[in-house]
Image (cartoon, rainbow, N blue to C red):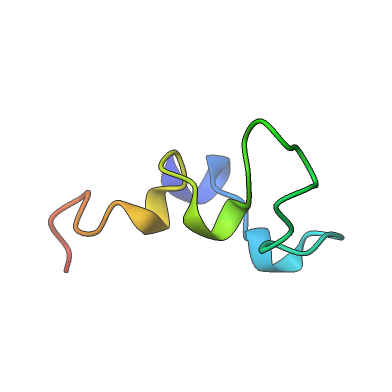
Length: 45
């Protein structure tokens, strides 16, 4: 499921650190909803 539903944000056509892309949400690289910012979500380190 993860392989078929996950997206590589680094390949997106926008700057992940752009705080003005969606002003209410802020930048992707620090977003609390970005799974890569959650640490050990699935127990795999």
